[in-house]
Length: 161
Image (cartoon, rainbow, N blue to C red; front, side, top):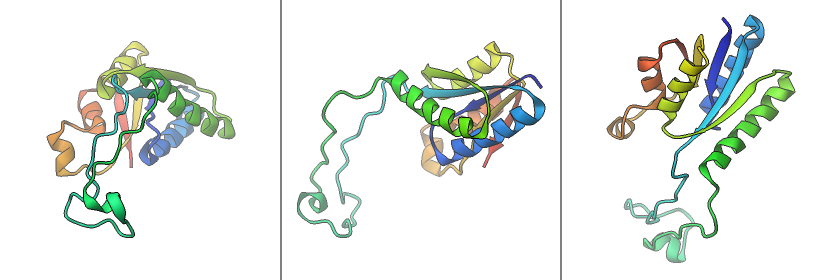
């Protein structure tokens, strides 16, 4: 095994995947490539009405508990690539404590597409991603990344729970 790619989004599941990929890379003396993919438009905070699901918010008073829309944060939002780089910096610090050398790649686009493309470009032997339980709503919005990667990857895939 020569190349292991691990997807990292800063979630708890991705942290576990990063740890497992690092263990494998060290044990197999494989090259480790840590990838973070940010959506093209960057994160946007949707207007959500507090308490609008019919339940009051405990301890809330005033506008928060009355269904008034929460404001969208003002000021410049980070660029998507900057968000990916921030995730990678946390991964770099985590791996540095363990003495693991890796390459870090920030991508912008569809997470599944970018992970699969990079795995192909780098001729990865293994693609590691965190996996979580997905509810009905997640499936309505499209196939979760872990499932899509597992179904479409040309290389082996390790789903870390």
